Length: 45
Image (cartoon, rainbow, N blue to C red; front, side, top):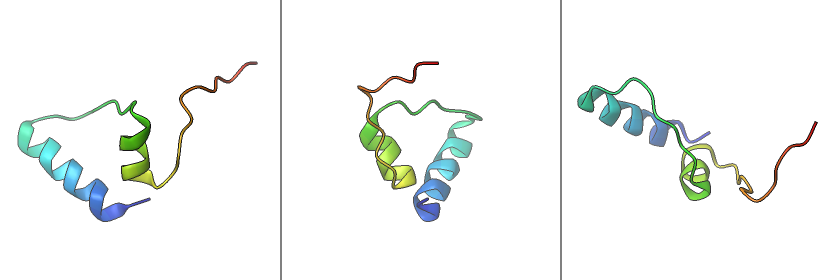
């Protein structure tokens, strides 16, 4: 995980008064976590 990036985002969220956010864009998830998420794949049980 990219801790410095996450800390910067959390700091901006705090400034804006936000407690939560939903990240759904694959590039944004990659930016924050360094993990590629393939949005075309679905998990089936």
